[in-house]
Length: 321
Length: 118
Image (cartoon, rainbow over all chains, first blue to last red; front, side):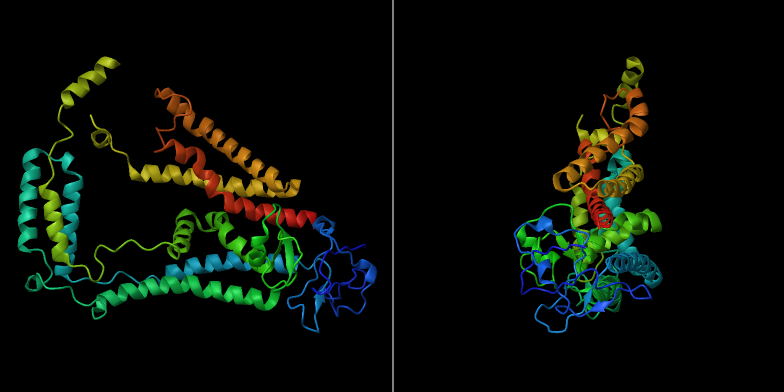
């Protein structure tokens, strides 16, 4: 088998294909490089296309290290499929871990529930006012505004006007943070583990060729751990296959876990990137201020009903038929 | 009559919008990965591969429109290629899936390109 390499001479070693066969157990044999190297197999040139994809890249991580073990044969299946299978299984496992770890909703004190629900009531009245008739809307508005302004719905009316308690001292707030931490942990731990696993086992192997060209800037990203300077950036190492799996396996989870689970996984992935929306009832929010704002919002509504002019609309609909 | 009041007279059900969007994105991501397999086996490279994806994902959306959307939407008096009966925006319907399925497409494309050519 003729092999051509356009690699720098100081870069990693290569081995003639005929010397390295599979051992009895099917694993590629480990060979010591530079020992049985026919010098004719070195060709240097800028044309990376001479790099036949059939000759798998027996590259090693550290070009400087003296004892490099080099795989030959089509070992890429031993890297590609483990990584892919592990990624899929981790996704499934992560889903079930999050399901199991989800703590049951904590029992909330009755005044606290009253505080939250009354605020939601106000928001519902404000956003659906058009479904109410004029008198029933103004009755609701008057009742809610008075109660909001006097602080009748507050959890502890004595604390009205005082600054909110430090969220760190509130045990309820700590619970919410713990839940967030747990979710993040379920995300971070498997990723770190898999990445270190890939780095420990498969680092330095060039396993796949991307079907589209990339600029040289991608080289450091795709070929991390492969210390060759002149290799085409289209060749990618095992860690970049991991990243490709990380972003592209969404459809597999769609199939395996159903839509909602996959959507939640996507949301979790996004969570790391985008800042979270502020929690409405989160720690550190002054409920009294929220009530005042809501009372103002209710007061400025210019009421109309969807049933205004419904007779004309009905007659028009009948006439046009 | 303002558009806000029109929406209040004939409100949009969020559950239905969610369901429709989900059905569309589901078929897009699944077909995208299958197109990736096809492109990898065909050995397409660079621009031809992306062009392949673009053409076939638009074709999928067209088929989705003709099979699922068009029959009732045309009957209800909407013009051709008007998806407003089932989807909120035209943009979301026609181009949303192209970006949603791209990651899966590149994954399977790369995988099968590597496996077949190796």
